[in-house]
Every structure is written in structure tokens, then in C-alpha cells.
Image 1 (tube, helix red, strand yellow):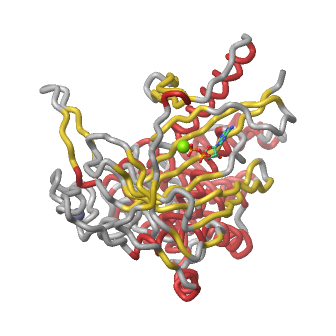
Image 2 (cartoon, rainbow, N blue to C red):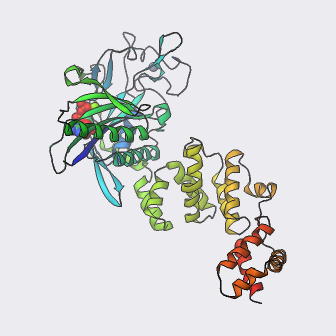
Image 3 (cartoon, rainbow, N blue to C red):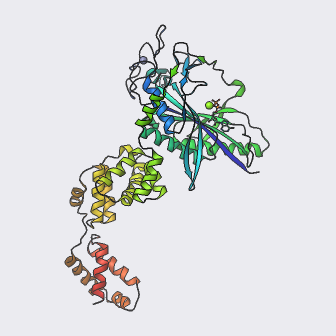
Length: 476
Ligand code: ADP
Ligand code: MG
Ligand code: ZN
């Protein structure tokens, strides 16, 4: 039997507010443990929460950018459970009145547009962090992360493969970066997701039994977890087994998921409206104000790039999916560089080097002005494309003026006709057999003679010019 995969995602994102959800503590990442804490976020008796208005604003911005309806009012509900990283013994969340609902994001799969519906976006607070000390065996608690503002984005089960999940997550990340709702630093845990996977016979409309893998913190891990899990479920059914609804732990090192708890042992959170927090009322003026503040979004920018700069849908998507790439791209264009060339450098060598060095687009150590200059040097025939790659590596190591790199490293091409003709004449004199072959119509011979001239100029001869001058000399 043929099965299809069904995936739904729950994405948690930390918001870029300066202060926490219910108090004035800083949200800075990497502060000394337990230094961004106060009686409020430590849950001391008698303290009272006050909702951060900017967090609501950011949640609405994300909702509008993801085509959601915005609720006129909402409440916050306590999700009760005991865990050492949660001093209040409940997490404030929104059970049934999310700030945003019924949205969607369109992704492009194999050149066709697929709509992934968003069920809801709600606000909630983060928990603290437990640090397990492997030497002493102690567990330490850092409550700096406690009560940081989060949004949770919940999709409908509209995703049909690991690839689609990856495309969707990339789109979500791009939108959150453009709107500056979150910095999306996955390595700092700012964006993480729960992945729900089920399978069903192809053509079946009823959903199959799902499993959920929580707190996956990289797109690659989400991709692998979906691939693994849909395969595991298929095998299970093919060998006559039965699937149970359960939470599974994804081990990214081993590349497998293992059962954690099933439906019977699932927790009952005893949700109830938080009596310490007032209802959230959202008027149209506030929504309009957020709407007006939204920047050009990735999808619109992609279309504009395709029309304005005549670059392919794929290239436009790759560039606009990263706010940093898009800004770098536009910066280079402002310096007069050709769109296609900039695109090729960014998506080719720059992306490759970033990947090799485990860096992200935001870490590019040189400026758009320097890249534009490098492209100009190639287009003006001053350096070859190969020398351009050397300059780029140098820009990564020690960013400075590309012209200086060219002169320091002697990378300039020889474009002096007299000097090149001299080398060509020597090559011709030394290779009478090839000259004869050329005159007899053997095209290959010219390639050999160009190669010899390049050698004679230590690889610095301008190849186009050599080609032209060589033909002139041979046809004399
Ligand atoms: P819970 O909060 O208990 O995890 P939800 O109903 O909120 O449950 O669903 C969570 C996520 O699981 C949603 O993204 C939803 O699309 C997805 N989902 C629900 N049923 C399935 C299924 N059978 N297969 C895959 N994903 C599913
Ligand atoms: Mg869930
Ligand atoms: Zn605090």
C-alpha cells in the first residue's frame, strides 16, 4: 500500500522585546545566570503580573504577516504543571482565545504554490533552563529565560513531507526576521518546534494516528525527524503493528525517535483563566497601527526582485528568505553591481563558505561595498573569476579593500596587448605542430595554444584577450 505523510507544526519563538512578559527584567541572552530576575518572575508570593504591550504588538504583527484574523479580545490561561524550571508551577498561555487565527503562508514546492494554513498564534511565557553539571552530577537552575515572551504558531496538518516542512519553517523564519518580531537565533533557542507526524493510505481523507516530537531546535533535525518517523510508522503498519498516539523523543545524534509517553500517561494541565491578568482588548486603531508598521514581506520582495531585476524565482526566493542576504543584495545593487552577478556570488561561493565555517548570513565579515567592488574588478577585466574567488576567501579572513588584496597578492590580469602578443609569438614559435593542426582546421589546437600562453603568463593573462590576439596572430 502507498502511504502519504501528514505533518503539523507547533513553532515557539521568543519575541524581541526588551523586557520580559510580565515584569521589567531584561531579556538579554547570555547574561550571568539568574541576573535577569525579580520577585515577579521568580514567583514570589504577593507579586502581580502586568502584560507587556509590545509582546502583544509583536504577536499581532506576526499574525498580520501570516494572513491571520486578529481577535478583538483575549484572555490568558494558566497551564498547570510542576517542574523545577517553572517556579510558578504554571505557565501562562492562551487556551482558547489566541490573539491570531485562521492564517496561512504560501510556499513554493516544485514550482507550484502550496498553501499551509495556520490554525492560530497565541502568546505565552517561556520556562527557565536547567543545566546538568556532568562533573558534580548537580542540576542547576537559570531563571533568566523564565517568563520571556513567546508566541506559538500552530499549523493545520497541511504539510506533506520533510521538504515542505523545511520550506515552511524557512518562510516563518524569514517573516519573523523581516518584521523584527524575533531574532530567530536557533542556536540560542529563539526558535524551536514540536513536530507532529502521521501517515495515511494515499487518497484517504481521515487523519492517521499521530506522534509528536517536542523541542526540535534546527530545521535539519526537523527534516530528519519527519523522514525517520514517517518511515517508522510505515514499517509498523506494513508488519501488521498498530500505531498509538504518543510523544516521542527525537535523538538527533542517533537519528532516531523513541517513545516517551502515550495518551494515557499524557498530562492534564487543568487550564483555567489567570485571575491575576486582565482581559486583553484590541481595538482596530491598534491593529491598523501595527499594519502600517509592517515592512515589505519576503513574498512581496521575491516578486519584486523577479520583476525588477529579472532573476529566477529560485534565486529570488533564496535571497529573500534571509533578511541579511536581501539587505546585502540591495546594498551591492546600490553600489552599481549587476543583480545576477551579486546573486551568483551570494548564493554560490558566499553561501558555501558560510556553510563550511558554520556561520550564518548575519556573520558575513565584509561589507556589501567590498563585494560590489570585487564584482566590478571582475567585470572590468582587472582580475579573472578565479582570482575573484581568492579575493573572496581573503575577504572572509581579513576584510579590506579588494583592490588592495589584488595588488598585495599580485592577482591582476595581464591585459596589456603588447605583453600578451609577445608571449603568444613565443608560444607559436615553440609549437609549430599545433599551428599546423590549427591551419588544417583542428579546433582543439587553439585550446592547447591558449593553455600554453596562460602558462607563459603564469595564469595571469586575460583569457578573452589571449583568445582574440592568438587568432589574429595565427590568421596572419
Ligand atoms: P496538542 O496541543 O494536543 O498538541 P493540537 O490539536 O493543538 O494538539 O495539534 C497540534 C498539532 O498537531 C497541529 O499542528 C496539528 O496540525 C497537528 N496534528 C493534529 N493531528 C495530526 C495528525 N493526525 N497528523 C499530523 N499532524 C497532526
Ligand atoms: Mg502539541
Ligand atoms: Zn522579572
